[in-house]
Every structure is written in C-alpha cells, then in structure tokens.
Length: 155
Image 1 (cartoon, rainbow, N blue to C red):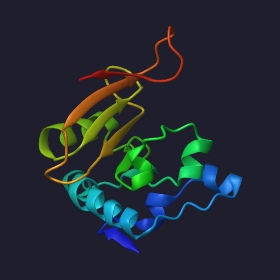
Image 2: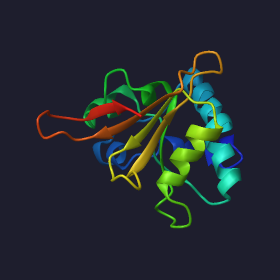
Image 3: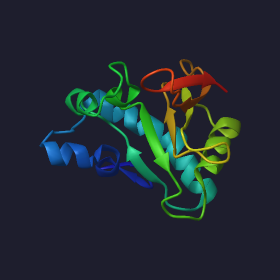
Image 4: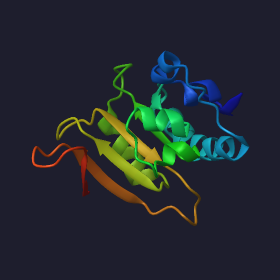
C-alpha cells in the first residue's frame, strides 16, 4: 500500500527490532490514516523538493515495539503521526537540509534536531497532526551527562 507517491506502508512500519523480537508492527485504520497525512504533508513535499530518496528510520511503532526500544509512552510514533528521517544514508542531501526545509517551508507539529552536532543532526524527527492542531514546535535533542536519557531544548 502506498501512503504517498514515494512512501509505502512497508517503509513506514519497517523495524529491525520488531523483526528480531518477533513483534507485529501493524497499524490499524486510524493509524494508517495518520501515516497518510504525514506522508502527504511532510514526506512527499520533502521528496519532491530535494528529488532524492529519504530513508525512514522509524515510522509507526506498535506499543510493544515502542516499549521494547524505550520510547516515550506518549510517542506520536504509536499514533502513526511521526517519522524519523535520515537523508545522510544516500549522501546527496544531509539531515540539516531536511530539518531547515521542514522548519521554514512546511506545516508540522513537532520538529526535532536529533543529536548529531551543530552542523548536522543524526536524524530528523517530525510529526504531523492536522493544520488546526499542529504546534510548530521546534527542538533540539541532546544528552546531558548530568541527567539520564534525552534532554530537549526549544530551538
């Protein structure tokens, strides 16, 4: 099933952790609807603007998968509303390019510069709810040696 011209449901649910642990990572109809919204409003515009493949390193996560990787209990991935994107895999565009294009040109709920350094994140987390519910929240994730886990600061 295609979520958009260049994103399949298979790509959006793929998880090596789920495969390794034997977890079924299958969204229900409302979650597929949410995946179609983020594909249409974020992924596809990125794909068409940069004209290069964009790797989805994490899309939909079942609650069992989310728990097994230590994800937040309120993760938008579990609703099919978030994608982690990595353009560095293909080498023609970097993750900073994706981040700034989304920030400056697209509607989104949350946009997170995930780790990396000051010039390029390791990946880009983006979520999408709806035009009336999107917060346009921009953050940077980093590790602070004083605190366990991930720390976020507002961009």
